[in-house]
View (cartoon, rainbow, N blue to C red):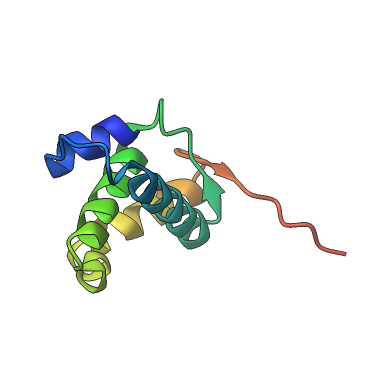
Length: 95
């Protein structure tokens, strides 16, 4: 995933790798919290594409515009999770 993000951002150096890995994890968490699901990003291209786009926006200090610009795609992702077409729904431990 790191190599794909670096390619998307046109980053050829390694000095930012740790920060980019953190950014990927935060974006995974963002999508998971938004949808209530986890994704197999090796097999599910569409959630991976949204994750990479969110990383790109955050990296370029435009995170506040991501939801507005990708609102339709995010709504569709939430719907597809609800229908069981993508992701695996998380089960919260409720006492």
